[in-house]
Length: 190
Image (cartoon, rainbow, N blue to C red; front, side, top):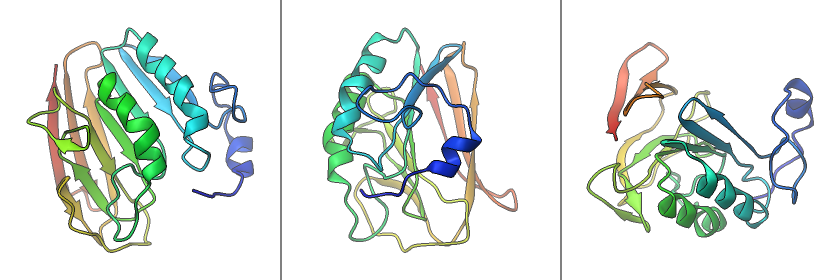
């Protein structure tokens, strides 16, 4: 997963410097907000270099809610794409430590998976992780039919709203287009 150096991005933001010692500071990091852990990973770098750090974050957090974000999706929506290194190194940890929601990009078509565990559909988010691929720009890709797709959209830019009562036990997720039309929603309750 080659990628250029995010020089401009890193100059614009003061990001946490608590990421893996194996990569440049601010490329991956974590923070807690109330009862939620947010882990930000850099899929332009070797996922293996971030795996031990990610496991430590997920294993040691007292947070009820766990969210992970990175660029290249573990479960791709685009035809011919398969980010096996991301899936091999990170999704077993998402399963083991029950990450609630994984936010991804890169494929330029909206996709929300069924809740997944070990790559297989499970009955509810209480049993697995939901993965979202989103696009907010004007560049759009085709989307392949996948067994793991719960909702797939092409040629529509979306934004997501997470209504999370962090100290509570309910997350309401909604995806809207630029005109404010609701295209997808689900609820996770703990």
